[in-house]
Amino acid sequence: MGKKSFDEIKLSSQVHKGHIASQITTVLKQHSADFFNNLTLAEKAKAKDLKSIETPILDALENSLKNPTIPLHIPGHARGEGVLPKFKDLAGQKIIDLDTTDEFNGLGKLHPAEGPIARAQILAAEAFGSGKAFFLINGSTIGNIALALTVAKENKKIIIGRNCHRSIISGLTLTGAEPIWAIPDKLEKWGIWGAITAENIESLLDKNPDAGAVWINNPTYEGIVSDVESIAKVCKQRNAALLVDEAHGCLWKFSNRFPKPALECGADAVVHSLHKTGGSFSQSSILHLSKDSKISADEVEANLSMLQSTSPSYMLLASLDAARAYLTSKYGQEKINKAIKNAEEARKILATIPGVKCLSSEDGFQIDPTKIYIKIEGLSGKRLESLLEMDYNITIEAATDEGILALSNIGNTAEELYAFCDAIKKIVKRNYSDITYLEHIKYMPLNIPEIVCTPRKAYISSKEEVLPEESIGRVSAEVIAICPPGVPILVPGERITEDHLPFLSKTHSIQVMKEV
Image (tube, rainbow, N blue to C red; front, side, top):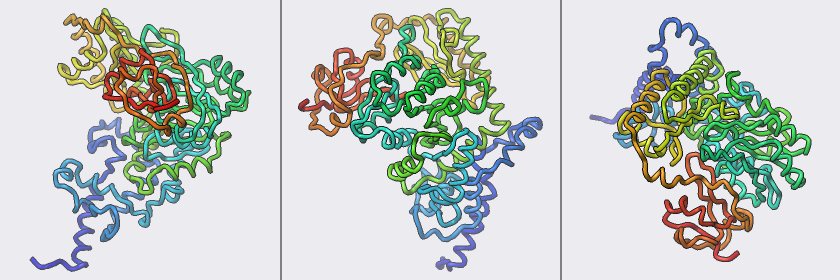
């Protein structure tokens, strides 16, 4: 076969790309390829607004597929021609076509945001009620680190909830700031962290008037909610900025059945993990600054430009655009309310099962209604997780020695939640007894160890690796955290005690400071 001319190649490419574009009823705009086909007539009527909502990145991406060029540029796979066939078969041509860096083809840039990306960020700010929105393609982790670089300067104090995500510690390690720990309530009955109170924050600000910011996590991983509005009032009185890692609360703006979102409570900065519960692709998040934020938007943007990739994934950016459009639609908000209702019904069923305890607002605190945290008397969460997966083909969000966490997501059905409840019923009837669990429950340490130095000083010090049993009394030079949710057990600069050993035993070694 002779070589094809450039004209023949271009024509072939156009035919192929036109075919792909016609098929692409957008993987990202739909939560499945058959999204609209699976709807009833009534549902189709409700979902019409999905098609009319502005989606600048999605539209630009789709248009770029309709006008293909000979790709003599990155990415080197050149629309899949340079991809391992096994991967291509798994991913499909549609996904591969969406992996592009055609900035010059109308898709715009992320640093600084321009074109469709800039427009999508404006729409996101309007949707969530912020003054400025920044798209994150390295997860909420990078948003937290960027905020740390902006507000947590070297040798400056910052008040932080001890149940923070490890990425905040990473930020402090880079900047050299001094953390002042705010201890959440201890829920001994459940073995988990509870809320952070305004009284706690007020006391810490009184003792540390030079602390320029307060940083809390809300809700907790298990769904417990702090009174952010009261905390914001305290911060405003002390002229301290309030940062809220609302990674697990990105849906709250879109239903009044949720707790009040942090941006409406007076927070200066909020990070949302849309990929967790909002329907965007993994690794995509949004950082928000409030309309009257004390935090410099220019400085945040500069820090994000330094930290994020200069080759952003347009697939991730488009998924954020799509998620925002979906959540603001009538159909999306109906799905959110259905997710809440499904979780509430599940909790009612679980409450009737002997031996099952389900975390709820009746325990005296506000919770995220889409989170279902349960424990079964005599059965560890790890064992329960294993039984659910092996015997009932059900996978959950997380398990500890104490209990399990399941989520009622916008993509879940009532039938799936009922199947979960039915499986729990059957497991309880089988009368399992977990002897290890009964003899020794390893609670997460709820007390702060001795702080010897700042995280940065410990991290950049001369270090050595020792076995966990040899580390008692030494000063940690690394973060030890349980993931998920990424809450630190040990922070660099803290002295290791025997209480930490149950959590360190899972590691081969730990880095400690050679000299203090």
